[in-house]
Image 1 (cartoon, rainbow, N blue to C red):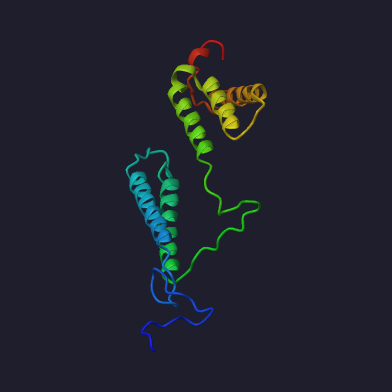
Image 2 (cartoon, rainbow, N blue to C red):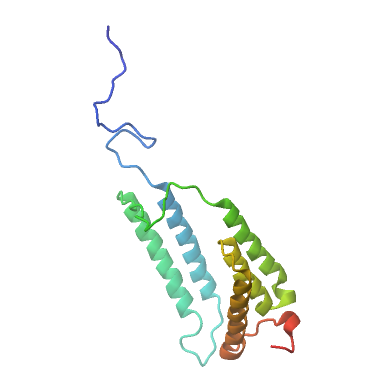
Length: 182
């Protein structure tokens, strides 16, 4: 009795979704990343070229965004060429990370909620208090159970960064309800 179906030899590669055995699989995610890098880099170069340059500044504000955008464009082309040649990234060994484990969605949702709360309250509360909520909330979402310490550390970090921006860099951040206190 004969059959028309060939069975592969033991240990032989099965045909994958990309083609017969022996042909390299195309990593479309790398092409997607190359496309995103190309778009972001090209837009950065275009946007930088529209900046106005003062007459007394020979370099102006354009040079660094143009260099960064150009670097992104070059990187995207190199990534596309490497992908076309069959280069595939090696999976990261991961120190103690189990890459087969599913994402911890409750933690991700808690972090998203804390960030949204910070965005919603930063104008009213000011950076010092909203930043403290951000730091303490992120610690809570990631599993910390020392809430008082987290709030105190968050306050120190947020107030310190507020003073660093306002006094050190001259960049005004809203003090919010602490206007006149900070």
